[in-house]
Image (cartoon, rainbow, N blue to C red; front, side, top):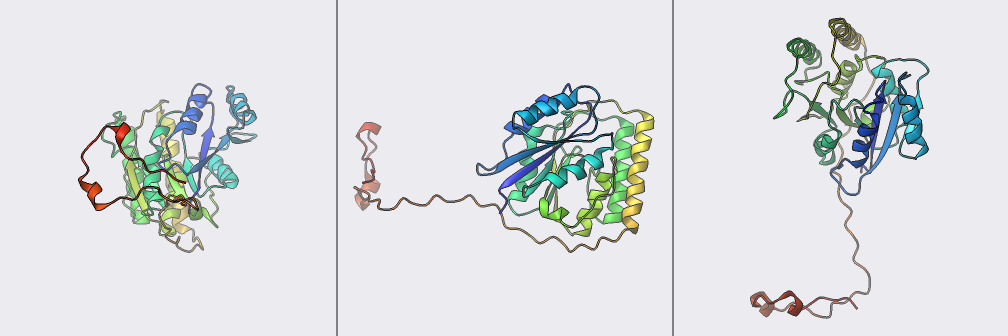
Length: 283
């Protein structure tokens, strides 16, 4: 049964938001009191002082960290983080605060209940959200539609970076995408392994403006990876379903005897002040 949730926090030039994002990950409710958490921070060769903040977090024992010697991209940071994961569930968090880490329990809910192997945080099924730019929305819709056609999975937001999945899903798989195209590669991988996929609404607030050139480059990265995944044959078996996470029931202490047993007449006992009510005590 899952006992540890591993957060992968890729960072790149996020000095203004990193400490806040890390604090949110530390304090977020996991949805179950017995779940433990580990935090893995991967710095993608930041140049604005983020690396110093990451080292400070490692010195405090808050997170396990890793540094890239050069900027490699989102997919490379995810691959690096996955090599350090020891937990049973992986959550890919966001260091720019575009996604709200306090909503992590929404992603974990379907997995902990045994209903899903993967949970996507969709920006477009939220009840309330920041209205996206028209061309950003259209480009995401086109990429999502193409990915859905290739994988036969009806997602609404394939390019989201807020996703949780069982660690077993990645067993035996090697991610090839270094950049943002890793999102399309993950969608193909999840479909190949016949994962049970849930989508949950999450809040989203764009923190960085996207230029036209960046949008075209990211779109091309997704399309290229979709084509590569279509031609690629993963020799992977479908992921096996898992049981719901059950809270451990406390064992009754031994040699305990109740000094007062409930009698049928107690069911009709009138309400009395708390100080005068019979108390069950253990000997």
